[in-house]
Length: 140
Image 1: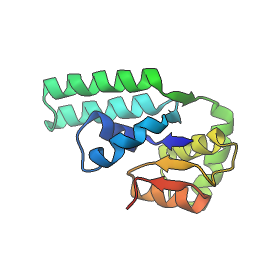
Image 2 (image 1 turned 135 degrees about the horizontal axis):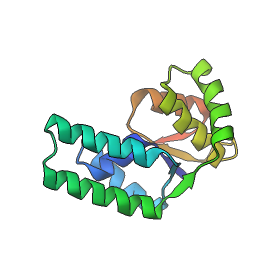
Image 3 (image 1 turned 30 degrees about the vertical axis):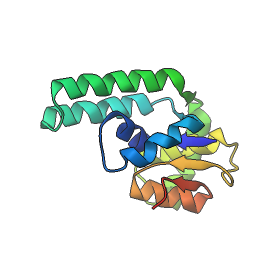
Image 4 (image 1 turned 90 degrees about the vertical axis):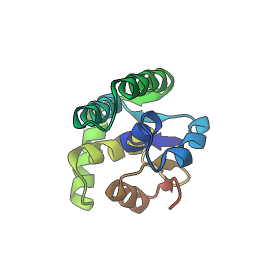
């Protein structure tokens, strides 16, 4: 199972340095937190407001987001995700949303991360996920 953080999913919607490394990983399927779509939409809209995306690029990114969301598997169990996130913020230097993402990943693998991957581009979340036992992708 490959759990995808919103940071990696954004890079599938908007061209980033990691985009080429991430695209082949989609073939393994996408599992993510049910709030990831909002995080990704927020990133797209922020970039549009800041002028780094044109209106055509914004439209293409939102279309890609819709297509990805229609195909991915959501982790929506808020209570179990929150319980894990509360432990994670005490154990790792994570922001709340990142702790919720990692909590959702742990729920997705029934708290057995060994042998499962977390796809992410956020440095702090990558480090925390590795310490929890996930294989972190993409490499490097």
